[in-house]
Length: 424
Image 1 (tube, rainbow, N blue to C red):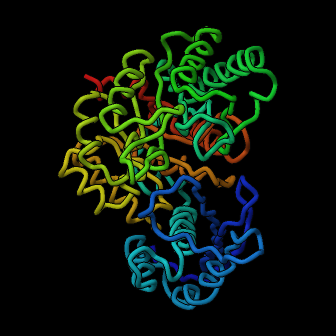
Image 2 (image 1 turned 45 degrees about the horizontal axis):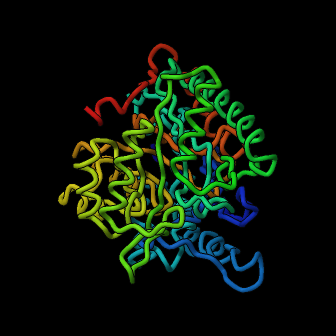
């Protein structure tokens, strides 16, 4: 397809935390107008592509007028009036236009908005849903890693680990997965209210409850109780996002969890205990973002899915280093960590070519844009993380997946317990 770009407009919109982010409209001569929003993280890896913020007093310093101006100025001048390049060519041109290592001049938030809007424009112009445009054979509905308890930087409580996750591996479809996950969430609310009082029903950034507890054992125990109370014993497995970089003291080379200092060996012992006692089958960022050796040792010792988020930041170069060293066996895939769709797709391909699983993920600062649902199906990733089954910025992704499941019909598949292969 060759289509002339006739318009490119960016603006500030609000994410789910009420902070500004970038939204981009890209128009083609055939009348297509495609829109994409850029999410934002709070618990971020130090090597992520640079999100351009304005600073100052406006919006507490979180404004994105500069990034918006870069789309409406330099990037628009580069694109409007010419044919829309292929996705990889467009993204390479945007990277070259920026000219910095981590997209710090134009801003990864500016560049990604254009990259995603362009992908949508091509799909819409061709009359295809985005997942089908990106992958004619994509058919897997991802198993949702549903975050029901929040901690870390995503909640105002004393839970150090960031996410406590239920995984509906025993569902027969994506819709049933959401049904039974919601039933567990409702049961969890009753348990929390009865045990800790109504303040325990306050929620964190990703919609999970944030009770006043500190023990990871207690949190995982609550999830098991809720699954049993909802009548779904045996249909769920469990996961953690530890975001351990934010728990790490570089001076003492130790982590603080539930008021206790632990070195790397002690953290490994803790994880092996949680795996054994609570059927934990996936752990994200269990150690500091630079501890490739520790990740490698834990991957070998645990026998489960060990996911690199801050470790890899969806960067093919970081991922290649991790693969060479045997660090982790799974890539957390966030397009805004690297700043273009093409680079993110390259990272996913590299992961899959080397036997690493791919977990498509949202950010804590999400919008109602459900684009990662299409991307998860296009990748046949088999796993998605997009928060609790509540609040519009989270349910938008789940609802898009439900619609895709309907569109795929008999050609679609819900993979069930994808972790059986990992732990075998």
